[in-house]
Amino acid sequence: MPSYTGGFKERMIQRLAGPEHISATALAKEVGVSQNTLSRWLREARTLDGMGKKKSARGDAGPSGPRRWTAEEKLRVVMEASALSDDELGAFLRREGLHETQLKEWRAKATEGATGALKDAKRKRSERTPEARKIRELERELRRKEKALAEAAALLVLKKKLTAYLEERDGDTDTRSET
Image (cartoon, rainbow, N blue to C red; front, side, top):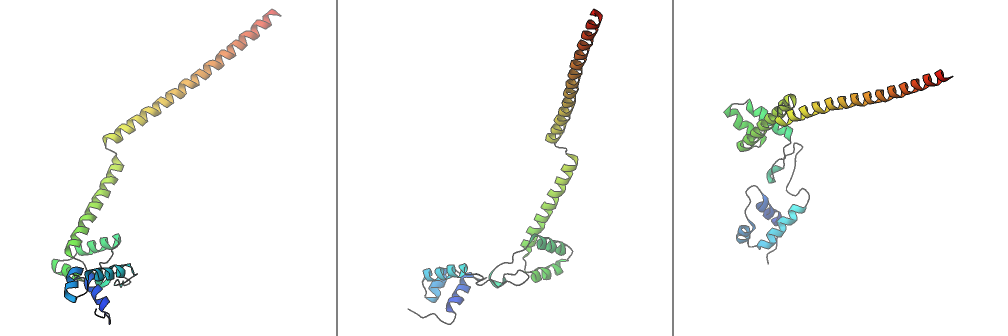
């Protein structure tokens, strides 16, 4: 069994996980190490913190992985790219480490998001949907009926008080005339 020293294992992991990675089976045939061993090394390397992922302050993952972009960064890139000519765009994309397909995808999502947000704002302002109109109509009818019910209750209370007052007054006049 061959001895693996001098970073051999690290080089094999890099070949398995790097940007131009190959399968464990193909690498096993090439170097004479079993496919199971290579797969185990790769699994172990992925469980270690930061192995092969040297991140810079900007958030780049380096040569072993893609950068994780925030929504704000994506929007900034889309806006900056929209102001560039085709020649400048290529240099800009290389400088940012992007592919044109990513930019197109982000641009489409930004357009979709902005369009959706503007439609929602318009809908909230106007409330033109049939459901919204029906709700407004029902709420208006409910308020009218509540007012009518309150008025009817007030009239009933007044009628009771008037009846009680008149009965009391009639009772007082009857007793005064007898004495």
